[in-house]
Image (cartoon, rainbow, N blue to C red):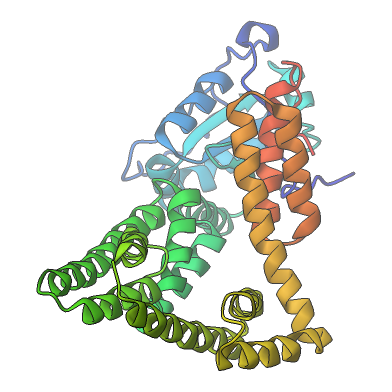
Length: 394
């Protein structure tokens, strides 16, 4: 018997109840009395309404497919489905659904069920987290339910990025923290980790705004050079924040004397070289290349340009470093293609959006960008696919 791979499937779209005959009683109940669970467990029996409920509540879906004459279905009912360790998890964190395959054969066929009972655990968006065939003990089922609930609440990549952002904040590396936190808030949305990331971003913005206010105060007191230093510090220390963007605008607009312009220019070259060296030490090689090329082009007559060219040669003459820089460039390019795909999708240009998503998967295989692109591509394809029961689809 062929076993289906759960990881690469998504639940099929809502289907017409009358077409599949989903009006059915619950599966057979055990004769032996058992203690009632702490939380009330109400099994749904209609697929369409259960899918809709899971989407609206943001809860994972538990689908049990069986038959009334299935011995192990009855054993599952009498054992694990009466165990408080299982029922409490289902009642509090899932939308539980029972389907009788004998009353809905088309649906069972569309789901590609080959063994009874079969349990499917899916996220609110239909992504499969587990595909369990046959009878399982209560402790094993409870553990699988916990893993699914955790995966739905916080994606692995979001947890990793949040931990990295926390480390960056602890090291006062605000630019890296801001980049990671923005990615989490954009992709995790209203999940707990997304809400927390948004709160931390707001705190960083307040800190950066305080630096900007201090710079403005120095300018008002006529301390132009000190104000410029404070603004440059805000741009460097809090890159990626609104305050840093405002500081850069204010810095560019300050009226300066010719000697101050030259002095500032030399200082900017020194600061840019220092950041490029820091990028080099931290293996942010693509960023280092960009800064070195900017120094060589805009400050060609200064000593910093000579040092930047030497640093650039250290990268380009080393294949391993250059390969890492290429990977980092691909990551940036993938993020741009993701944004372009979203823009095309909003205009209803699904083919163009799909082309961008495929480029992301080719540029950065086996990465978070590729996973997000594949998920979005699946969503686009499901939107344009014929509205027929497809069960689980690859």
